[in-house]
Length: 362
Ligand SMILES: [Zn+2]
Image 1 (cartoon, rainbow, N blue to C red):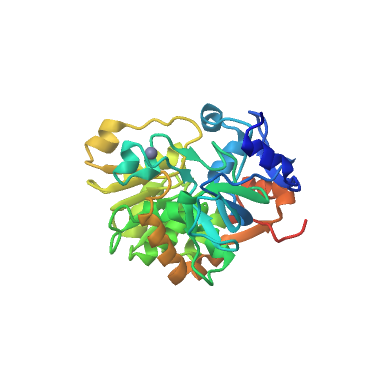
Image 2 (image 1 turned 90 degrees about the horizontal axis):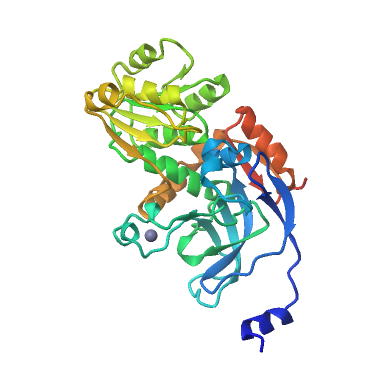
């Protein structure tokens, strides 16, 4: 006899196919693919995606660098920075309704392991990441567990709501240490560095110096609140950072994943300073642990995702109060069908945050 679930499923009309951006094979690139619309599981929400952001990690996955190749399975639908509208609810979900707008915590924690049970679900031992380990939101629809849904406050623009996930990383990084009234250095002015500058400034950091190799991004850094933006390729960068701040940085945010920037951050830090690492190096990096870390008495913190849900409350407050200040960073938007153009824009580096706009026409 057929299981009951199969019988009820087979009676339903199949949903029309949907467009997705898939990593189909362990190689460079991504492919536009039509797939069956997913069904929400018992405790899941089916979201109609409205906006999605392209993340630095999507770039790694697209290029299939050493870090991506070593860590990620294929095939998978990409996309983990999303805001969507509830289209269907699993039978166990009672606290959402069709039409509700939700942002999604991309770290799918199990809620059962020791880190989860002690308030550290962002480093769940059985963590799966949306759009990396399980199919994500570069798609018309995506099914997500109810426990990772964050209700978007009414009236918040979609262009702000789509930033919850990436901005949350920057909030986590910039608020890990007390930056109020402290000299801060931000290495790397991609979207994550730019958002960290805005958050650090809102939290009272002064002065803030940013570094990047790209003049385009240095200009954005100043627009978003850096008091000085320096050329990361300068042979005198360390001295220039100290000149711009008037001292060594007390807090350093490494947002680039670049070996040279990482070494610079360690070397230039004030003795006893605090370092936050967020940028993902494409290959393993080396540091002079004794000279550049131990003997300087540094303290360091690695950011992965957001504190659940502490960072989300802070991120929401930042978006409500300062969301409009991020507008200069939202430089490009593309329809899903033009994903390849969107990724090529990301690869040029001449951009801030690149969004996929599901309402835009190809
Ligand atoms: Zn867990």
